Image (tube, rainbow, N blue to C red; front, top):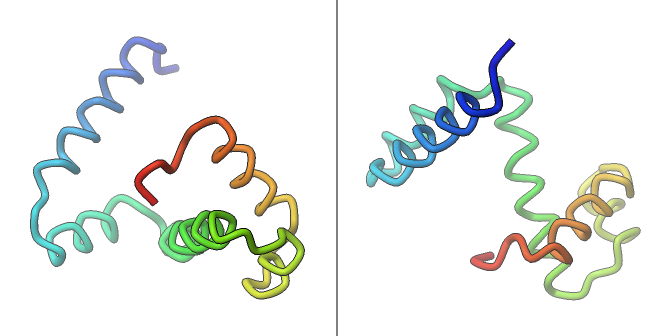
Length: 88
């Protein structure tokens, strides 16, 4: 089992590495190596959810337009309310 302390250091290491990547091809290569194909499909959809929510599009319309469950959209909405996605 990974301790919370080491997990936080792993997270910091990941964030530091991502900040060092300055070429789109290098970032794409890294993401394809570290994420599963399903994760690579889901993450861009999550970005679209946030963008649509910030435009004021209703959750049910977002779910319908993106072919996902309303619960997935609601999760994005909760994250926005908690102050996340300020740069989106």
